[in-house]
Image (cartoon, rainbow, N blue to C red; front, side, top):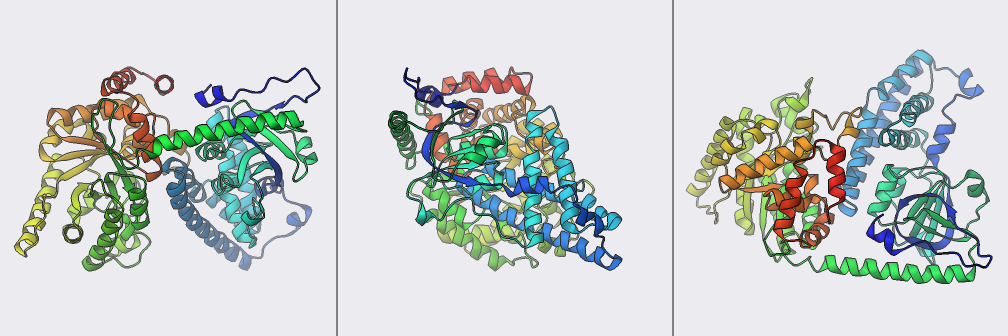
Length: 619
């Protein structure tokens, strides 16, 4: 039981006739009280309509219509993927990168041949309309997942229905059902009572309008529940369908998401007691937020004052502004892909420089602590195709793109493109007063590092010959994201100024789990002992050679794991802006020696389950 749940114990019923609460499934901790707002999920309607009706069975497409329906389905999938890309960016800004990854997975679901190709085939083989073909195939896949013994995998059935439901909505031309009333018509936050909520539903909820959530279906491992916890909206599930049908809009109910309790037919005494405890909950949350807010303008450090740079991962100008507002001490990962993605024409050097200037100024304007920006050069290839780049270097379609031409390998095959980007970055830094550092992605060998450093020196010499001076001279580092780089870290450390561990790709390559493959994406999650040991090896090499070691993957933004990375020897953590204050606050709870002791203890774990158990025991 968490500290938060211990604070808000279920009330002991009085000897009077006060009705006992119903015991349901706890999803997200906290107390909530308010009027009922009923919502019926379109995803469940999709499930109930998966079997063809008599009219469907009698309807068959003509040969001419088959091609039209297949194209209509492809177009709808493309539109749905575009919607999900926008939703991913929104959730990353407002909730967090980990929650945003849910919608990256939805994109993979829609592109999975198990679903899309099967629906295309069903259109041609059975003459089904696109809607019916996709609905049947999606529900068959969802039911297979739902029947699995693994709770985590079974919970992904909701994701399949959510992702394909988006396509079905586009095919039918219907608008989304509003989850909540208009904000201006809400006099107090409501209790959202639904048969089910998809991750997309939950990600759009405003905690100012929704006091709590109660559903018929769903469990604690579903993505909807994970998002509810991130939004700090109390939630329970397991309401009986009969009770759901009998609830009336506006009826006042209450719930305890930590204990899994639902209060119906509240007595005045129960309501008064719950209101008092909700006020206490709000006060404690406000105090917790105030404690975090005090870190906004302060640098990261352990309890005994050991400094740890807390930087932000940024992918566009808006992200740079948010990073500054949230108290980032610098940008530890500037994803320069923002300038190249979704374009048919590659930006020239002048356009690149102008875009970098705007982003650098957006960050510097709101950041009094520091103006360091670490720019990762274009990391194209694998799961990041760029039409504009392909027009210059040829198709990036490969049998195994994760092991193909990507990152620094493209730089070394097409050096002039890298020179253009370096010149644009360096001139923008000089014009804006930014302390720029350069970081190269997808490094595997010492020869690559030597050539990339030489190219950088050549560009610097060229610009200095034209009168440009950068003080200090830009540091040059590499991403450590391949097993080769991790194993050779002691050698590579002599050739670079710093390491930045990209834990997302490092996890992928160490564990042989393709995070863009929908069939195994669910395995990309829990911290594995092999990954932890690889990080420790890189940190040791950095310490031995006096090189700063940073982490810019998702692990850095996890308040449970970030301080432990510091215990391994990492001295810079870069994360999505929403995680900055929580990581600073947790890091400052203990001295460095404590984090070192716990980090070393984790190195003894032999399984992911054992490692997770150790994590949960750390204060």
